[in-house]
Length: 291
Image (cartoon, rainbow, N blue to C red; front, side, top):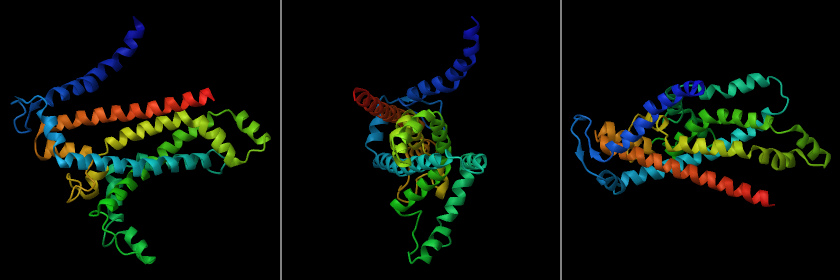
């Protein structure tokens, strides 16, 4: 009986704050519910989803979520891998450097975003000032579609690169040193050791960070919300993500039923993306096992 008593608190909290909200959100998504009168629920069936898929702003936010996710996740993980590889060497002040890697992650998303919003200012921002020194004209980082998405992605990259670098570093330190010694005896250079020893040994860790980063990119909310302070993601919705779109429908237009439908679409999207990542990783491991 004692093992069940040990795990009971976790399952109790999960049922109360995880499973029940998930099921209740699915229930609400089938009704017309307004924020002013949450007790008045009108059955709509799948109409909330039908209206959602015919709304052009839903597809804009879906596209923005994908593009911001790609241009923030790919550079982030590549840089994290490089930083982890450097920290894996016997450098001076390694402990300080590893601690410093976590400072952006520990920084409040509100504080970080407000600072970056000033850096990307059109008229007095530091980024445009430095660009002007090399002859590049000022860029309107908050109005342009590509520019604003790059600016938001930069905040995400800055906050999460160090966190992922430490995860990669932990994975690198679990690779047996004998593999590197054998590769060195065979005449492999540091680069060949990295590609043929480090990367294969890190594959499960890389899959984990890709999945977690994919989930985070799909749920991106704080950075685009605070970048300009607009729930519409700019004047033309140029960087509105699915998280912002859900917030706009629920707390901007007071349509709680439609917001619940968006939440469930996001949940299903995450399940599909995670499943695709897991399937690709499984197929790759099967091919290498056959070899």
